[in-house]
Image (cartoon, rainbow, N blue to C red; front, top):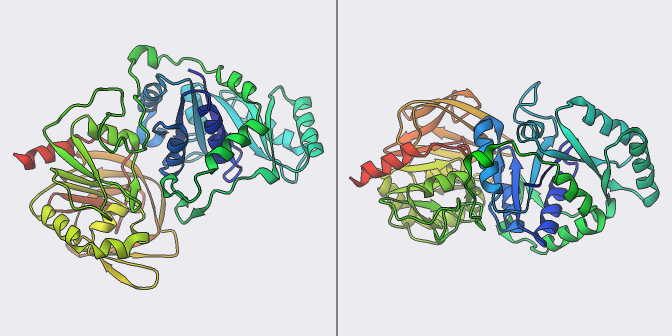
Length: 465
């Protein structure tokens, strides 16, 4: 399967724009399987909108090498080319080695890498930069270079000539400074694709690639991908879903398997306030439960045997969520009746008693947890997490890896019970996370794409019985 990993020398170098531009251009011609290295919901939402297939996350820390191989092989099946967007700089991982870096993914999947280099203010020095990235780890195949923020044709020629004189790696694109496409962002990153701030950017991205990148050469580089043996051994395919959280009507399982009616139903909150979901996690739920997607901003609470509230932006919709007090009461009553409920980050915040905005205004929320959350101007936690799990209705005992990213603090009642003892990460309070109330669990930790949903499914079945 032809595949390329788009990496950068550092964050902000333009790899997201380049990756999305290539996806948009290739999608005009063929079926593209999009992927993102690391924990991310926002970039994959754009990938999904561009390619019409769910973008999958490839994260070595949260998923492990075997699950990354399986996810890549399954999602690549039936497509014509895979485009993987890296994270941070090519070699930036968790520590002093390449763990969880884009290089780690490229090494395990044996992918050719195209390196995006910001050449603003440099000429021959760019060759030294590229040479360093090529030589740093000989296991990584840096097979092409794209120059970004090229000042003029003369500037581009100087850089290209210097690289050609020193290295055999080809320059396969030169993007002028004036061609930079603005993708507006906020405190958690780019705007989500579904927010529709300007949907013409997809055509602009495709034109950017076709005007400034050597698409034929890039396709040839993608052909260098070697079969690591997993697809042949395991088979399977991805039916392709146009949403990062699966099909809203439940018409497909997101894994190429015909839809099946199950004995339990789980309601998944999905709207602008709750929009952070990993496609693989939702697919896992679909294999054992009927899913009904609904909006806490607009819909009544559906009939279901369990509920899942993902992360997102409840702070941007606090007034609207608070105004729907009947929905909040029904959620509170369902929790008190023992219906299993799982809330991640923004979902957990909604399940608290109140949300306080930056102006000090307090908005009543669903009120399941004896806690209130206050938004802050400062980032409170960012990074991978690892926790030891005690008894709870959602997550199996043992260990769970995930990640956290939030600008809020949650103040809990003194006697609140926690299910997670943090080995890595901040959590809610005193190194603890995962509040438990009734059969409801809420955490700042986002579960990994490979989350084991068996305990949650079992709790839903037990409640039905």
